[in-house]
Image (cartoon, rainbow, N blue to C red; front, top):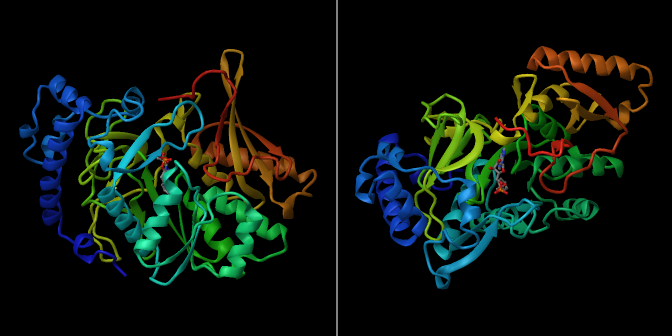
Length: 437
Ligand code: DLL
């Protein structure tokens, strides 16, 4: 089922025509109503009238997360509070959140793109849908919630946490659809097994997972453990929330961007140069319909590439690759750049390992020491002396595949903190900010 056939199957030319029309409106709206945008246009020596083509967008300066912090809480809102219907924020727990706002129309558009995502995943009206994303300032819970309702499915607003209750409700309500962060869903699977239940026997047929980086190997594991189709959903609160893009269940090969609402670019994270389709770099989004919180060239910090080829599902939208990681989560291990998802791919190729891991960075004299902490699955927890053989094999494979040597520590089963929302993959014990590019 294609939710909005008209928009999701336009030719590139037709789509670009709509995008340009909407871009001009967004630029004028942001310029006229937000001091920040007016100033940044003035600094760049441009006026809204200078944006006459999609390529002209490149004249506009980038927006960054620090701009949200500097204008905390409502300085980037483009409408009065009498028109704002809802506020959301970043999911971080440290410091002040980054705050975003939505008009009623924004919420309608957001619900529409999430409804499309549910259909992309294989959802149908009448499905019961278990939504294990956290409700609150985080956009996951309420974002999915409105989209599920919009497409005509029945939402179970369970939120994250209270895992045994989640399992009871999955057993009793028999949902077809399931959403949550991949790491939390794995946590639910683990708990089901601990209770002697077979997750493959559950009623769930498809999962919409995202909000954190996850590898193809993690998808395979989730699909096998739960006997489902799992698709990747992407978004960020600054641009809207979940639903900016989502994979289709037919292709599972890149995430379809809701291009009538969001214009995507890929830039070189260091030089800021715009890169052609196919090249990997930092994703940048411009909103095309947002009223309360328009964003122009927002630097997401997420690494991906874009693919304009049509998809087997019949949709024509530009697809983005799975997110490799965040620019600021890139580890530099003796000069080699490594993302935690790449380490995850190697770890999950070992059936003896549980899908829970952390990269711990310690200061070792003048050097950084990178330790990968992982656990054996309960089935293999009695490996005994063979454990050290296994550790050697894993280290070899990491060296082979990624070109880096790491210290691997096998910690006791269940000792790595289980996530109820976004997993913490990097623990930096060096008392300084995270390694950055
Ligand atoms: O995580 C929105 C969301 C909710 C997306 C539910 C998908 C499902 P934030 O809390 O603002 O919003 O965090 C946004 O999370 O910049 C990425 O770094 C990361 N992220 C989101 N989706 C994915 C994904 C939500 N599918 C930040 N793969 C983004 C990898 C993701 N990373």
